[in-house]
Image 1 (spheres, helix red, strand yellow):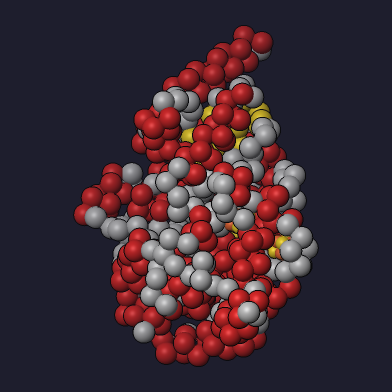
Image 2 (cartoon, rainbow over the protein chains, first blue to last red; image 1 turned 60 degrees about the vertical axis):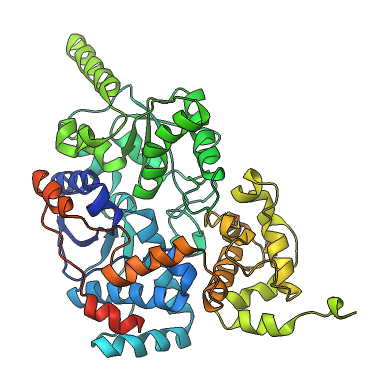
Length: 303
Length: 154
Ligand code: SF4
Ligand code: SF4
């Protein structure tokens, strides 16, 4: 077995409170990959990069720095499971490294609670950790039931990739990270015209977010996607709940299961859908399971 | 002829907000507009135009609870594309901070931020959350240290 990796998971708010099935899938799938998740006490909301940041950027930075201090004190790097958390914590690191005065101001506040931000803990989204620290081969070797025949429409979301000046993980216009991971679990990644379109969640307009999610589903459907694969609970909310709203308000049914990447990984590692919480999703995945089962039967016949 | 004067006072104020000073670098090329989803899906949203209004120091149309700036999706595409490192989305967020200073935040932004300040979480905990987590075999969620947050946010 390759070397064990120890990291501090930063679960954020949406996942542990609203979508614990995603947390379940992460805990289940990291063990076979040799990743030890060291849960640290005391994290708060990252805080949210849309509304909380809109009210006061300095407060936003201070709370983010406080979270990072906890990982620093434990001597661990952080993995994030949500693109919003990734955005906040990475941008805080960037700004505090870029601007000495800002760092001094934040540290002056942190001093009141006996903390000091140094900038020693790194932050990575879990999919980036898989590619860069574990390596694709290790992900591949954990697969016991390849998702052969499952066509995954990838949704990147915005904050994993952009701004590349801060995120430093891929080409923001022609990314390959998620395609590589989807291939590693035996499924087929599909490219489609709206692959990089925003889910619209941060926009405070009644109609626009729904129009955006509609365009994304339409684009995925037209290339024949079986499921939508994504890596962010906020995007998930836009698409899972969003499909219900689109059906109600726009009279258009897509019926496309929306699956968090670690849940797909879990299926490929041989876990049952319930073991990675897929029974909690609004759009059911029976069709997908049939495709996987069918490809398994074919393999047996071939052998 | 006063309307032709640049409102430097407002620009000075914007410069003091984190990221606000980058508005000075905008040369109005429009690259941000081409990539902007909010511009694509609405008739009136235009990041170049928002930057123009800040350059002219004319905040009247921007600083309000129903201003166009709240339609920005925060997608960071403009930040990616801008050749001048304006980081347009960050300028827009700086403008939102000015809305907060002037007491004209949209009510839901204020409410959402209060939830985080008071509970340490953006999603409200209910009594069922830990029960559901236990059913899935997940550890109990504990409250973040609210006393520390209170000190930091005072
Ligand atoms: S913000 Fe940047 S991309 Fe947009 S108009 Fe100004 S210089 Fe051009
Ligand atoms: S962050 Fe806002 S202004 Fe920038 S491209 Fe996205 S929607 Fe447009």
